[in-house]
Length: 119
Image (cartoon, rainbow, N blue to C red; front, side):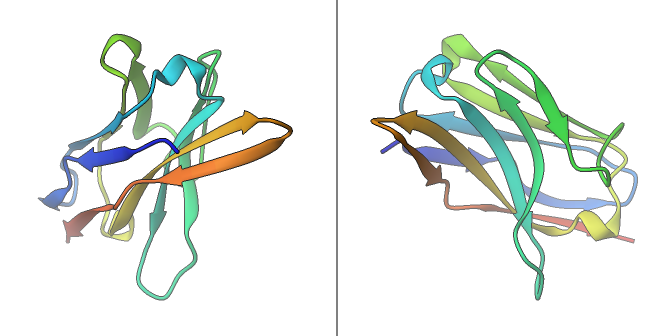
């Protein structure tokens, strides 16, 4: 199972920026999808951004144009650059990896990092 460690969360004012990092225990070029999810209090976990093994990206509509997912293959790390943050972006952000092995999909999750945006 892939081990994922997030960092970079914190408290920021609306309009500010944060960059989250997710360090993986395995080579990320062998992982089919890596992504960021978030869960706000009382809400379901939702996909924020995802990057495929081929480098394609997709984003939730609510973050398009503000967030950017990227990766450093040499460091086995995925990033989420968050700009123009809004109070509604407040949530715990989780890194996720998804691999297809032996005919099935396997998910791994990081421990989560808190992002809080004040108005």
